[in-house]
Image (cartoon, rainbow, N blue to C red; front, side):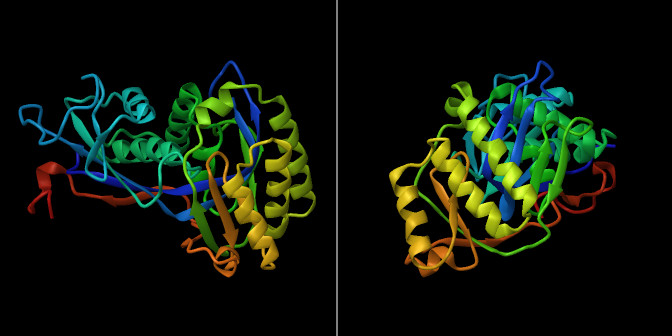
Length: 308
């Protein structure tokens, strides 16, 4: 039964290190590694609409999938269209609204969050009856096929500080985690193209990621996560000057920090970046993972405005 709207929240995710695992089946492809899910994230609202009513926004899709608004501005996020197409949701039947306090392209898993949020919200809005694992798989496949991510979706679905032990969507992948929830600080210096890095030779990067994962699994603490991440960034040749300078400044102040993969972003636990003289954004670890935050009454039962 169609509802007025449904909204999902998906936490941001900073990857500390990773190794790529391609596969013929995109559901089995992905990455191993570790990262942190954040209380800063992406809120996705899917609003079913009457086909006879025009939408008061600019079309950005090709007519087959719903256009997407990010903080009120039309954007092209292909993975969202792919997810909704897989669920049979078209531009005639819905609009999608995204709201986020995270920068795009800076290593926070925004595309993965948008994909998973669209899957969860569309499923609720149209009462499609899909399970969580099905929706995670659909979003993961969209990310893999578009080359915009390999492990964000499964990590964001889990929450906490996830360790991706085996790659892939549910039924293929396996996750563990570090059972702690520290304060998180981060500073962003700009974008880094995930597609460009993943489209290149990832052999050396993946080897470094495998060493980092082995190190973390031998000593599963947050301090080890950051140490392994710093080594990974050097071995994978991904450090940029501004990021390296910030990591060194935090170390000089007695703390630990690491680079978010893939973006020109530095993150630290506690007050590491503040102590180093930066003015960071501050959030926490999102322990619960992705989920629906509202599931309104069926449209046939509504007695208040959809714009409440």
